[in-house]
Structure formats: structure tokens, C-alpha cells
Image (cartoon, rainbow, N blue to C red; front, side, top):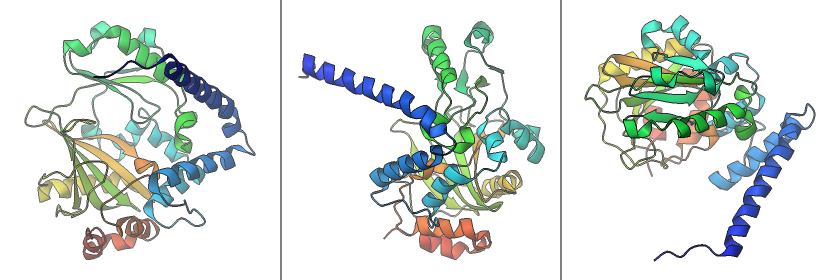
Length: 326
């Protein structure tokens, strides 16, 4: 039987929330300041990396894949990263490089909550901010269509620059908008399978396939080489799945991903396998924010080698060896 928190516990929780809120707003302008902003951001990432990865962050120079990701989000000032992090602007990159057919349909985008035509939206849709990562609301049934909650969520998303929470340079100053997309459906009528193609220097190295609904027990993780052969490792944050990737689908995924990712040292190209064909949901330059835990100890170092020398992508045998669980 659970007991209600005591008055002192409630006060302690309130004090903790107040302190975190104060610290956030106090540090926000400092992390944006020209001279001290970057050192403060680096220090924050170093503390978080050590807490999650249980090892110090080494960036001078970066070695493993995770270190390269953190180095990029701190120091890479490629203006294209701003377009990639903007879920509206990135659509033009996808359209130019892969074609209109690969775009997820767009129902609309709005900079004010009051401009969203709630009654005109379909029965099933997805609502999300165009300027951040990991946020969204999925409306699958009438019970999900709580306009009070949706308006509150959308307003909260619009209030914040995602950079202030993530300290990832590509998101800094991205225009804040709310977008709506139709709910995509897989060939079986359920949620579509997600395929994330990891590219290095515009070459596809491997494919991660995610099945099931995000943040539920049905979510599973599967990794394959660019030809569709299974890799034995997995992401430690998600249970291993038993998905089988058709080699022809793998070929199409890698071909399209290489077109879209050309010119980038690394890019993750995120697909949905829908009943209407492949759709690209977004491009992800900061995979896992550099906090990726894998079951194969050698994988992080090997993926770092691919980042520095993309010609090694063709060494499929080395990929399988590096992702072998010990």
C-alpha cells in the first residue's frame, strides 16, 4: 500500500523544482554569451557524458562515435545543420535530393497556437514542434483529441528554444512552429516500421530498424548492415527484436539515404515503412546526443573510425566483427 508523501517531502520536491527553474533561467543567457557560452556548454556535456557513459568525455581530438557526436553539436557550425534541425526547412533538402514522393505529407505549420485549425484536422494525426527533438502528440482516437491538453502542449513547445535544453548548436534560433502530419500506417494497418540509415561521408554503413510504439514494451531494436544482413549487437536502452529486413528494401533504403546525406560527415536518415511506400520523417545529425550504449564494446570506436574515414564503410566484415557481442 502506497502512502502519501509527507509535508516535508512535498516541500522538498517544490524547492527542487524551483531551484532547477531558477538555475535554467539564470544559466540561459550565460550559455548564449559569446565568450563564456561555449565553455559552459562543454562543461555541461562533459558532466552529463560521464554520468551516463561512466567514462570521461574526450574531445581533443574525438575518437569514438559518441565523442564525434558531442564534438559536432558543440563545434560544428555548418549552416546546413540549421536546416536539418528545422523540420520544415529539411523538407526542401529531402525534396531536392530524394523527391517529393519521399516526404511525409504536411497538414500545416503554425507559429501561434490560436492559428491551428483544430476542427479541420483529420481524426488521426501527429502534432509536433518543428524546432526540437523528441516531442510530439499522437492522436489515434477520439480520446486523444483533448484540445485543452493539446493547446497547452503546443504553447509550451513554442515558448522554448530547444537549444536552451539540449545545448545542441543546430537547434539554436530555429524558427518555432507547430506542425501537423497525418498519422502514418504500416502495410499491416498498424504503426509503420521505422528504419534509420546511418551514413558516413554520404555512404550507408548500417540500418537500425525499430518496431512497435515508442516508449512502450512493444518497442524493439534491430541492426543490419547495408545489405540487410543482421548485426549481432543492439542498443542497450531497447530490447532486441526479431525483425527480418528484406535485402531489396535495404538496397532502396541505402540508395535513397546516400542521396540525401551527401556532403555530411555523418547523418542519420530516418524512414517510415508505410502502406504507401517509404517516407523520410527527418534527418538526424546528433544521434542519441552522443550518449549511445551498445552491447558490443568495440562498436563505438569502430563507428568513430567510419566517421574519420568513410572509405571503410565498404569493409562489411570489419563492421560485423566490431559489432560482435563479447
